[in-house]
Length: 276
Ligand SMILES: [Zn+2]
Image (cartoon, rainbow, N blue to C red; front, side, top):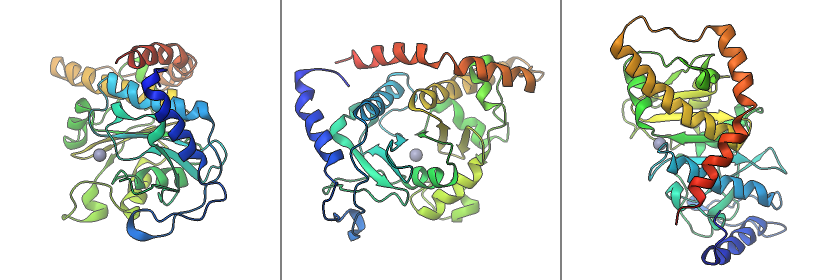
């Protein structure tokens, strides 16, 4: 986060909130159910990284006023950290809450939560390897969720898409009467099932969910899923004979690019966090 005086009180409040659940009586989150007790204070660096991930994805045009990012709690794989309901660009450490994997907030203190938080909890349950998740409505991926044209990696930066990008059809899980939002645990489970072992899943008529083993990696993947979608649409407008990465190329490129994520992450952070 920005180290400005203006934000210092917010940071302190945020840290107190994240620590606040230890030994405290269960709070009453939305829905009136008793919230779980905290698993303890999260690593401050992780909270800072989560705030940065929100800001970077907004700065890079992947998130706008909507979408959310979460990270698995460093102390307890059965918990994750995510902001209260807020536009990603406005997220500070003070807004970060702890959730259990049923997506109950430990201590929401009356604040509203993301309606679609269930996708995070259900994916963390289904995928022990996943440490960070981003949900976005990035515009270039939308056509690939509705056209039957599969999103495929056509350059090295998006090699992580090599295993395929499934499309989640919410009608299959929720019938014809949903509002397109993954607003229940059952829909979250269906989305996690559609994701399978892949790095990303498209949501028909809605957006995408991208997963990774760290916040910098999930930010990298979110950005290059959007870029690949844009480039693929451009390439398909030129020719129907687009050449995609071969499986062996993609496998090697993914390993190489994974080793360089830190370089881009530092640049993206500096750009996003230097904005007023
Ligand atoms: Zn959404």
